[in-house]
Image 1 (tube, rainbow, N blue to C red):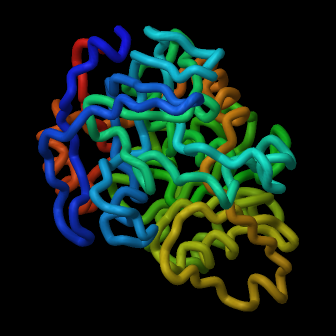
Image 2: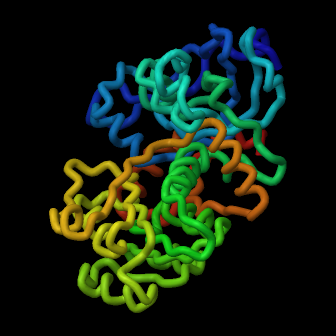
Length: 357
């Protein structure tokens, strides 16, 4: 396509003021590409809990900012230093933007680069995101899509999939061990079940919503429990299932402040909790930390090398995403409304450009 064929203006869904609804309007199309930048024509974008945090001003985002850090589309132009992509490539858009390349995270283990404290931000969080006709992404953080992975699947995988895939890697569990997933029936949770299965893990799935329990059930965990019955019930059932003190490691995806405590309670002594959700505060009883020696590890979005591995696993295992489809950027307010109602099962996804589908 090339920059000369890209229109000068585009439709975008933006945060203009904190704690106010999105505004959908025409803005200039970004065309000034730095060496590692790519301009992508967005095919599909999806909604994530982090989008609400951006609206609330949690990340001190400079406004206006186009929403959504989960997107996929087709490359239409590349910067002068981009070697691994070309116009016409189907890609899962990267989040990280312009890492420094010099700090300990950038020069340390390859799966730490996403923690670079000097980067310019993340697409859809500190930089304009995927709720638009076009988005600028950093090629170093972007992944080529396998032919088996559709745009509709790829967009949610850009954050939700990458996040839970890395969480599972952080557990360091081996085939046959047991992982507990608290918040198993959400947009991240049902993906976590599928990736855990691909790793040969046994799965204890826990949710507190009827919709979440039903979605969890669709993906056939080894044990499914209703968190509304209380921690004592959960612990008893998990210990019966495992035949020992609990799951080998747990992953908490639930936003309730006490959910991390629940995840600790079902985990065996000396076990590990990987905390993903971001409530303020996170509440964990001292007895879990001190008397049972539960270790806690935070994890965020994965590194580029892990994202590429995740896509290959998704392609090989036929990973699916439960989507609530909306057609066109102007339907984003309806998607937000459904998400806030608590009745959304899976991910809210907007088809930005149906011609790419």
